Image 1: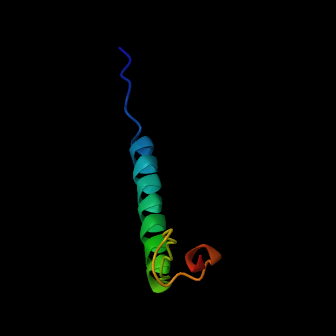
Image 2: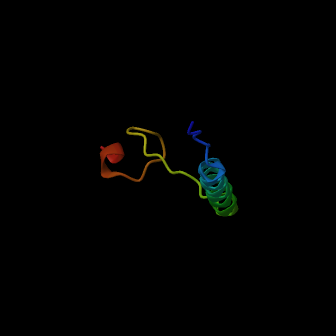
Amino acid sequence: MIYHEEKSSGVAFHVVVILIAMVAIVGSLALSSGHQTSARVWVPGSPGGSSSESSR
């Protein structure tokens, strides 16, 4: 009889790929958390706006 053995390298490959992806996600979050930029949203008709439409 021929027995087919499962290769453990297949499981190890998937674990390594998942670990690399997790490190990449954590690294990108760590880099982006240091540079917090404020989001500026333009709202039409808001008081104090510098557009020429509000002066009419």
